[in-house]
Image (tube, rainbow, N blue to C red):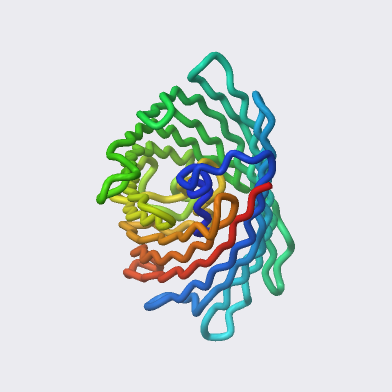
Length: 276
């Protein structure tokens, strides 16, 4: 299930402390869907001591369905380990665990294994690729995501500094029939554009092109409910309270196909970040 967790916000704020914690929550409103609403809450934490960085994220999701259908419950637990080497390289690997239960149905488990490499020039540009392998009950999904990002502008200028990023997602589903979707392969593009000036950071983002069972946000976000998404777009706004803490709010809207008809989700998110 999609969750709007902007881990990338930590980098945009320039936090360099050894430990960071971020509690967050979101509300999801659906229209023209069998789902009525949902809510999600969780905590992200990271620990950094060169050359290693460890990230952990845990959250709980509840979806309320219409017409007396059973509620959907999901718990996610994600671990990512990073290793920095040379002057400009980083490699990482992790696992995203998913525990699902529904009223009247037995619990079941899904997981995503992933890894990647990144080459970067600090405050200039970065490029890399990620690979994801998702395990479901009767099928699996592979995803390859090359990416590139650029920093430009001057933080102290009237316009502030900017960051632009593009990712291309190639998704292959081993069995579209068992997965309940119309295609075996998808191509999808994620775009992000951020501006930082003073304590404010504003980020516009969009996902273009159909996709299903997609992994996003470096493995922290999993679309595991089987909908075919057509597009999404949103905005995040953060305010740095000081050098080690910030508040963020965000909104996104997505269009997806459910039971051969178009449905929509509106996601509202809030979080607080503190570093030590």
